[in-house]
Image 1 (cartoon, rainbow, N blue to C red):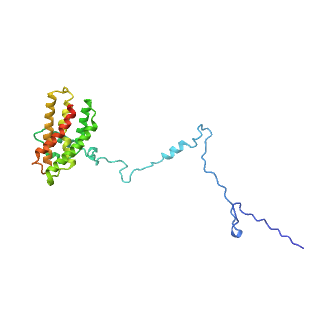
Image 2: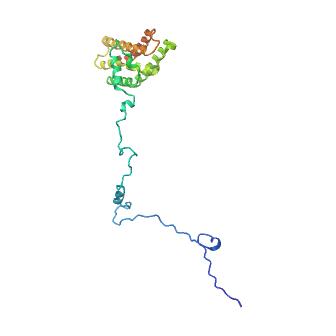
Image 3: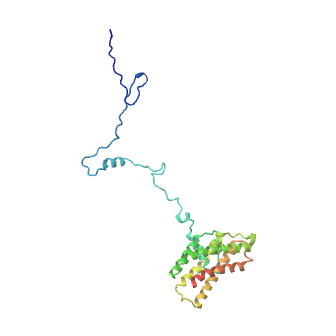
Length: 251
């Protein structure tokens, strides 16, 4: 006679094998969709599913950025800041003193040129290009190329003549050539009112070239050592430089 026992069925998880021992059987969780905000039924725009009023209220409840710590309420103090021109290395008073010194061709003050800069020469170069443009001559590239060549030419000539005692660097040569361009700039401004050709135009150009030559020679000799005995040759080199620039004005 066979006796039958009531054995309950074994239930396995739907995701895989049963756990060891058959205890604590966990079923797989069904992923729930992400949170969806409540969309008002009266909204005519489908993508405007958030409440603008609540977002504005939440952002206006407090400041997002409270400023730097210990900054005095977040206010910047510009009293200790240097002027913008001083940070760029441009000193208008120094440029004016150097330019005014060139105006006197018989007594050029070399003391104000101890600190050589390029802001004044760039201003004179741009003025020269502007006056040439008013005369109908577009010569920006030519003037820029001649400026570079002239500075290198004066640097090489002076140091070859002075030898080991010559201490005139290229930066100072560029500054001297640039500030001494003031007579040529004045000549280019006067040439707008002078008749084309003629002996008068050549005589006026020669006067301004001698003016620029005297100023540049005095500055080059006084700013460096070993140039007093070669003043004539340095003056000849400077004369060639400014005569070349005056040809742009005359012709």
